[in-house]
Image 1 (cartoon, helix red, strand yellow):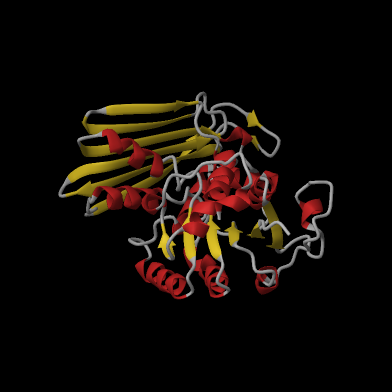
Image 2 (cartoon, helix red, strand yellow; image 1 turned 45 degrees about the vertical axis):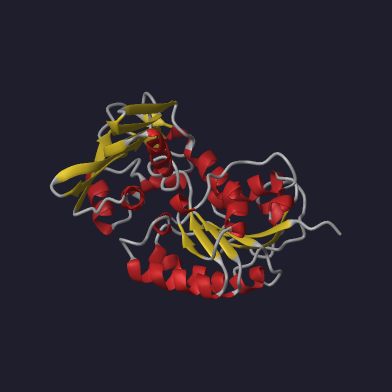
Length: 337
């Protein structure tokens, strides 16, 4: 019998479906469990649109999904680490490695040190590796600039700008950036914490951790980008005067000087998408990905490509700066573990 890389999918929302389908396209990978709150009792293959059964029934019982002893869990449920903590702890106690798209677990050592320490200790006790990754946080505004500094003699400041046309992004993402809200609704949702891109602080902390910088002051602003004309897509129609998306700016200071600046814009109808890293140092650098890195594709790719790295990594709660660069593999993925 040929061994395969066995995974369980925890969370089958729009992103979970992408993760699951991409993993199943790879040679040598099979799914052995899956959880979600909807479509209970249905076969995963039918739920994710493969048009065939995979022999795995969707459940809302996490322990049942783990009973088949997967090598790794692809975890895609929540942005909040506080809310996802119990799920993660249950998986760790089952002695299964985790790749999670939870934004707040990408680098929680400064923002939520107690939870980070708790999960790190639990993972080490159970010989398990836990990694948070995705496109942002996970790559565009942290791993990418960190890697670019490798050719520098010294670095004094890093600025990252990410601009996305959100027209083709999934509906939950468009809702998260406030598309379709009136200015008043935007402010209400912002005040409740429901409207923001999660991860700028974590990305800033990851860069600072890699560079050996100590952030003394962190500031983040969130503002709506207002439509000047009607914009429609398959999910929404936004009228003039309503929000088409969000602009967030995060500034990290050390000893009174700005060392990291994050500029994030995501809105419907953005005339140009791009990702740019500016490094002020020796040498100065400006690196741009024209057209931008497509978020949904990249999130799924980063998570799936990280699976072998996580399975083979040292135990504990790791971040993207702690592991070797991830990449796809054209052969049998079971040979990577």
